[in-house]
Amino acid sequence: MNVAEGHGSAPGFVVCGDNPLVYQLARELDDRFPDALVTVVLPHLDCTFLPQLQQLEGVRILSAARLDEATLRAAGIEHARALALLDQADVDNFHAALRAQELNPQIRLVIRMFNTGLGFRVRKLFADCVVLSISEMAAPSFIAAALGERTLDYLRLGDRTLYVASAGDPPPERVVCGLSDGPEPDGITLRPRSAPTDRVLALAARVPYSPGTPRRWLSLARYLVRHELIRLLLGLIGLIAVGCCVLVGIGNGWGAAVYETMLDAAGAAAPEPEKQPLFKVLQLLITFTGLAMTPVVTALVVGGVLRAQLAASGSPDPARYENHVVVAGLGNVGMRVMEQLSDLGVRVVGLDVDENARGIVLAHTLGVPVVIGQATWEDTLRAAGVPRARALVLVTSNDAVNLEAAMLGQSYRDDLRVVLRLSDDDLAERVQRSLTDKVVVRSVFQLSAEGFAAAMAERRVIATLSVNHSTLMVAEVPVEQGSALAGKQIDAVVLPEHTRVIALQRELGAELQWRPAPETTLAQGNQLVVVTTRTGLKKLLARSAGSSEGGATAVAAAPV
Image (tube, rainbow, N blue to C red; front, side, top):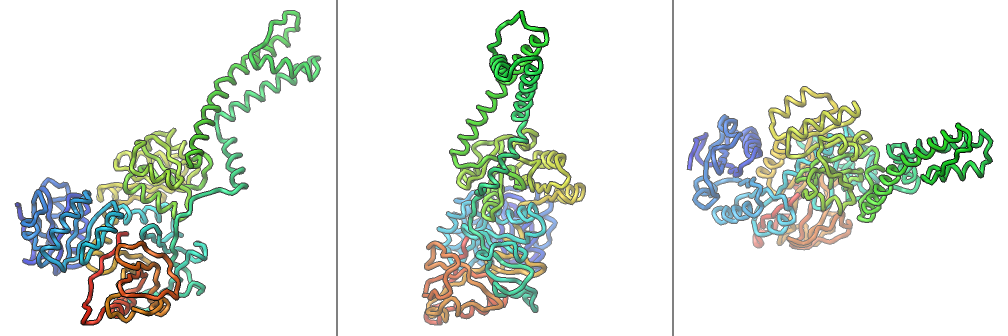
């Protein structure tokens, strides 16, 4: 075990993992808590971010192949304030969390898991735990950049999306409350839904796109006009029609001219030596034009069959989309971006080079069409409707592909919003300075570091939302034994300017009941999911605390 000494003797925080998030989180904790020692446990010392990590003054570095009991003791887990487990393997993180809780039952555990369903179920095994997914934490930033300034912040909560938007944008039934500036220390005040405010907080469920009849016919007309094969077919039919008219002009009746034209176009023309030269020339032209139509019609029939199969599978046709968002790369981050956009009612087209990508099944479930192909291929981008799209979000795991596809996307339209993912933070900053303001560069690890740091520092807070320079918190508040909240209705629990209840969990591990009725009566063992200011959370936790006989029971935070 290699040790690089930092400042202090007893660590305040322990961070374990083998990815750039380790450095980002250690830097965030070092900046926010200069008096606390941050211990980083790496599986080896070959990490690309090790030189940057060694430059942090308040960080101690350990190297160990396994997070066994000896390693955790060496990291000072018995006296640590919080532990972050950042490996990609969900089961390994769960195993290490069990070991850590045995050594320090009071430690706060922050576990990275992609499978938040698993996290939701295993959290009841820990006294104080929050399960986070970096893809879910990073997705709101990609969405906000893709949709523009009117969307401020997003947060995934279970199967819902909580977001801040301009007043009047969300449907009234989605609005939780209004938001306005408030006094310090919170800097923000919650207002009634009907109060005039510039911004509102809304909670969205999944709303799949289903075009109405007028839009359907309009989309079909646009499809017919823009389809190259259909335009070619119409041109060939026009030439044949002109030939028919010329036949009428040289003395044939309409019936005979149409009959001759249809036979010639079908390839059934018979030699007629006695006819005049102009008739023979027209006959040849119509015959060859008809032959040229054969492969065009065949291609259209095959394409129609494929589109019919796509429609039968429940996926809309990407050719009908306009002002949509194209998400390229349906891995962990891409599928979260696609899912949240779908929840917000935004039309989405998925794109991935791998037909077995992780997000393909989810796309079919959501009714999102998927184009299989490389994002750097022009035909693939056109098939996904990028020239007509609102935004192109590039979240593949290959930085080179994302960069090339971003430049190709910009070549279609100067006003196309392009959001690309880069894993190297320094490269991301330099690329952002070099490209136009319509191109936004994001680093997934940098985006999620702040959320992980907040989760390690704040108990019961499971997520945060930014509004201007203020912060709203989402927290779980337990109704403990002997709590003043037991027996009260939800409308009596709400602090008008500070808190709103957005979900109720009857017992730990049960399904969340979203937007519970105000007259719902609370009982011991219930947990409230609330949106709150810091002042509101402090007051609400004081009211929820149990009596001295019952003792205070630590709450496990739900995955977001």
